[in-house]
Length: 434
Image: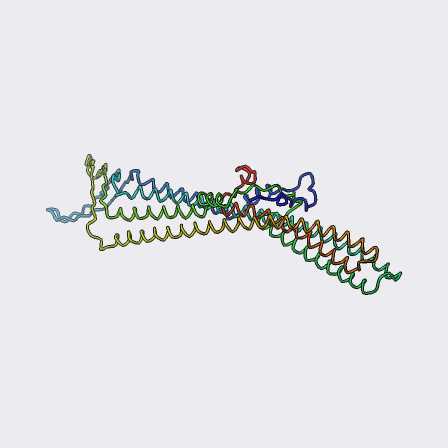
């Protein structure tokens, strides 16, 4: 696909920026710093890393240290030669124990849990990429919308001022009898229509400014014109191939399928034997008997083999395999959606580029037509209505160019988003910027 040079001309429709106008890079940096969706996605990665630490901890021995203090009062009554005697003894026992358990074999459960945790981290990281892409495309859209609506207000303001000037001229010509009252009414009606259009354009600009503030975090100031967007792939086939390799939605689905497969291994390990090594050191003393104490050390190897569990674990294994099949189907669904979105975005961009080119041709033709109609009106070949219609057609062409350039510019980034390659690097920003 050949991109026309007109595709990158949106900046010409905007008033030239001041020495330090706000740029798209500034807006993106602010959006990345303030967006709660991004913060939530990044916290998801941190949580997933804790899952991996928890899974890895099962490879380490479990050691605990315990101290027991016990005391009791023993009262005895005895009958002797001198009568009944009561004895009260206070017994105080202390026990200190150090115990350790090391699992030697778990039927593959520990390895499967670590693999599952790794897949969870990868899935969370793809969720961050997806969130970043969404923030980027929303920022680009609202930035371009504000520029478009600013240009619309400027164009409609100039149009209304031109009609106001023509209306005053028509009034003077009516006073000398060169035109009829019908010509004056037509001019008044068209001027009123221009004022209504200007009011609507201003309202749309305020709406765009509000959307900008919602995404970026503050209202827009003076915005710099948009820079040239990155070049799209050379062909739809290249775009589709890259999307299938890097699109975060598709990669996230694949990682979730990998986690589901690891869950099968986790469930299967429940039917495997397990081997544990247990060690303990114990020290006990009885303060009621001086020097009465005991010490012991023990090492035990324990083998546990499941024999019958009523079919519970078999059912869990079958259920986890069903989950794998479902994850595979979701992956295929994501792959098809990615291919469809890439194709849709590709053709939308191609059409947008042609619309920009046609809009510029139409604008040039309408400018020449208006100039010709004005000249013909001067020699009596055209009426006031002809001039008004030519002015309206020129206005529509100018607004069409602004709209087409905005749509074409955003379409480039929408294609990159559908591929999964939209990033701050695509805007020429460093990763540290946000």
